[in-house]
Length: 334
Image (cartoon, rainbow, N blue to C red; front, side, top):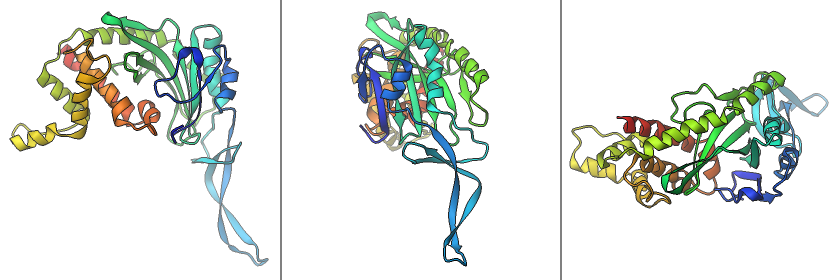
């Protein structure tokens, strides 16, 4: 598998994931079995850091401890995932999977994929929300998932978010649960910092947030219908792409300046995706097309196989797509 995907498993019945990575497992796999099959049945611990401090009178190497700094270590192979402070409280992988356990066993969700990225530094599990899909006219289907992310990295929080996947082109978008996917309402987001214990109270808060998945998908379906029913003029789409990429040129730009602007590499990619990406013939000339030109370009053109999954969910790609949705909604309403 590409370097950024360390281990991964996926449910056979759900089909090969859009990123086409991982090993298939039985359809009736339990949450505990998925933890094992995805290669995530390991723990982490905080270990003291030392450095050489010269040779002592007895001829032996002396070591000094680094105060208030610790190595976050994977216990199975002693690999160092990051350096953390005294207040950092590790969260174990099996605790993250407990998030999904009640929903999966109750039949509300189906655990689809799980795995680790970047050498174990980012753990995820993805569950399909039953009854969480919607279709636009002409057979344009979007399916809803909940993504749980547990980074073993300082500065990143454990979080849960809604992930919508447009089936025709496997484009993805992540956003806060229970809020609008156009970014206007973040009330349903769940985010857990590593400076407090991951106890029963926090787990109850997380479970409440997961229960908002249907609400978030319903809101996104309204957003998709708005965009698919709103015509987009060519000049406005150019402005939209410019704003998404944060390209700037002033009103007094020369013809040569404008040519340079149009020749921007990512601008050309967006224009290509606007016409030729899968599914673009369904709603040609709409803001749904313009928005999906961005999501397709980010997920399938700008990202290499090595970083596609990480970029789609965590990196610059995720932020770019969320900004594109905000802007597309603004243009459509205008």
